[in-house]
Image (cartoon, rainbow, N blue to C red; front, side):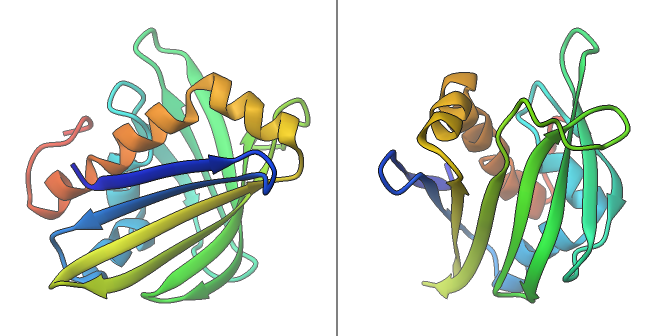
Amino acid sequence: MPVTDVTHDLDALTLTMTARFAAPIDQVWDVYADPRKLEKVWGPETYPATVVDHELAPGGRVTYFMTGPEGDKHYGYWEVDAVDAPRSFTFRDGFADETFAKNPELPESTNEFVFSEVDGGTEAVYTSTYASREGLEQVLAMGVVEGATSAINQIDALLAGGATSTD
């Protein structure tokens, strides 16, 4: 499994996940740069994503929804702050309504995804920072660790040309 470490720090308001992939950095980067690849891994296996808009550039926006096993839809967005392809990007990730407007009832996180070459593969460090302890506790209670782990663990199969939840 690609996810090798998960830590959350309620004082620093962060959730950090580390993963290792048996693929070059450019291939891992392409998972996030290509909306069709991203939607194969952004949601957990039982909640596949559909990417509606995808502009992975400073000032860009990515909008998506995940569809649950009962047909329920969960909407979200990224507001992209910085991109250093293929090494990193930062963005704000939040919950949205069906028009992709921010849902102020649920927390937004600031995210930094950093990719580095390690032992012939790629290490990815995903760090999410929340504005409050309550916001971090809320997403932890909602299952963000389990959902993100399931999503990230699909990347190896995609990169190897294997089946994913949306194939």
